[in-house]
Each structure stands twice: as C-alpha cells, then as structure tokens.
Length: 349
Ligand SMILES: NC(=O)c1ccc[n+]([C@@H]2O[C@H](COP(=O)([O-])OP(=O)(O)OC[C@H]3O[C@@H](n4cnc5c(N)ncnc54)[C@H](O)[C@@H]3O)[C@@H](O)[C@H]2O)c1
Image (cartoon, rainbow, N blue to C red; front, side, top):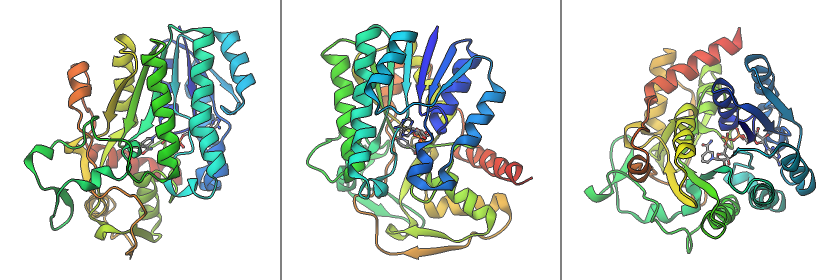
C-alpha cells in the first residue's frame, strides 16, 4: 500500500509519516519547507524532515509545491497512491492578510490540484483533508457565554459539548485564511458527494504536539511552551487571556484518520479537536506550564483581540465518535504539555 502525505515535515504530516511507516506502508511525502517562507527561521521544518529520514524505513521525500499542478499530476500518475493525507497549508489567520494570493493558491487551489490528480489517477483512493474550525468564521462567538475566573465558557447546558458540524459556515467573519480553507473544505466535500470519492474532511480545533515548529502566528501551545521555557515574553492577545481552545495531540488526529480509512464515508465532515476534557484557556495553560517548569511565565497583555478570533471554541466530538466508536482521545492536556516540555529540554542539550 502506498500513501502520499502533503506537508510531511509539518506537525500533522510528520505524525502521518511516522504512523504509516510503522504500519508498513510505502510512504511518500511532499513538503517544500514553505513554513519557513511564511514564518521565518523559527518556522523552518527541515529538522523534522531529517528526524523522519533517520526514524523511518520506507519514506520518500519529494521537494514539491502543491501549487505546481503539472508536477503533482505527474507524481500521481507515476505512483498511483492508495491513500492521500493532505496537510500542507498556509495555516495562519494573520499571515493570510499579507499574502492573500499565496494563501488562496496554497490552501484552495493546492487542495483542488490534489483532489483532481486523485480523481484522474486513483478515484477509489481514500483522501483525508485537514480542514479547520475557522470554516465556521466567528459564528461560534454568537453562542451565549459566561465569564468564569480563568476562562470563558458556554452559558447554556445544551452547548456544553461544544460546536457541532451543523454550525453555519457562511455569513460570518472568517479572515482570508478561513475563507481559503472554507473553499478547500467545500470543494473536498464535492469530490466526495458529487464524484463519490472517499474523501473525509476534518475540521481541526487546536492540533498540537512536540513536533510542531511553533511560531507566534501559528502553533499556539508549541510556541507558548517554547517561549516560557526560554524565559522570553509571551503576549496574550485579547479576551483577557480567557479564550478557550481544545487541544488534540497529533497522534490522536492520526488515529481518527486510520478509522476513517477503514470505513470511508464520501464527503463527510467531522470536527476534530481535544473536546471538552482537553479544553483550556490561555491563562489555564500558562498555570499548567508554570507548574511543569517550576517558574513563572513572563507574559504581557494586548487588549485588542484578533479580528474574528474565537472566544470559546470546543469541538463537539459526538459525530466522529458515533461514526467511529473505536476512536477516542488518548492523551490528556496534562500529558501533552508534559511531553512538549520534555521535548523542549531535550532540544536544548
Ligand atoms: N495546528 C493547528 O492548530 C491546526 C488547527 C486546525 C487546522 N489545521 C490544519 O491542519 C493542517 C496541518 O497543520 P500543521 O499544524 O501540521 O501545519 P504545519 O505548518 O506544521 O505543516 C504544514 C506543512 O506544509 C508545508 N507546506 C506549506 N505550503 C506548501 C506547499 N505549497 N507545498 C508543499 N508543502 C507546503 C509546510 O512547509 C509545512 O511543513 C493544515 O491544513 C492546517 O490548516 C491546523
């Protein structure tokens, strides 16, 4: 079995490379280290590529750009992949406004290039697309909220489990990043619904893990741990630091992909995050990190919230769990943080 992973040097892509290599697949990865172009040296993913090269048995790296339609098609014709895990992206809200065409070309057109290459070469392949909760724009902010001492939370009991897939995706403020990902999300649904292909769309909450090249504009928890350990200053942006995110470790993302691959449902969308149990505000994350590091985190506060930023976002995992009862979160937020802190110390020595 042959699998193609795009964004293979990134957080989710690299987890996918390790996972499928362990499972005995022939693994092909596409990554052009564009994260460095987006975010500078701190976003460089070459270290992760080198780690994968050493740790895998059957991994073939392709230094390709998903925007290059012809080269992508040539690779698909040559290799005829059984499964495609699409994780390459321009992943940041704030970055997108500086590079609107690049953002759209990578996120929307790049996704279309991959879907169409799959349709032309192996329409029966499984195609897993990593979408985002930003497809909902700021619609989740319309839910009634209550302010607690360290976090915002949903005010109504019926919202306790979080945001479901039936939350609307239009007539809401997305940011250009949210819009380019929504375009890709809808096109991917169409390749499932219209063409009947085995496409699954996963709308990520906060995806995290020790293999993220965290930067200020993307990879919140990874960046926070990095800055805290180095004793540098972290800036909390808006909502009093009480904004809530649900954190899922990259390994649990892959476990969901594996379940979908066994029993694909064409064009289905799923919310995929840490859920209520793994949700925390920035202030709560800082307290946990302080306990792990044994020192105070140096932070400052900028009152002006990011445009369209979620105040409280928790993924309702009910649909995913009902379709795939074997899937569950296996890593708690505390375990995730512990692993990330340990990895940071290891990287230092
Ligand atoms: N990390 C999160 O919190 C989060 C949340 C929701 C959704 N997502 C989505 O999940 C996916 C994976 O996210 P991640 O955190 O692993 O991102 P990441 O930035 O760590 O990985 C993406 C990789 O894609 C590569 N890449 C970018 N443009 C490319 C191009 N044109 N051609 C080839 N390679 C290219 C980058 O170099 C990078 O290594 C993305 O689609 C992202 O939008 C992430």
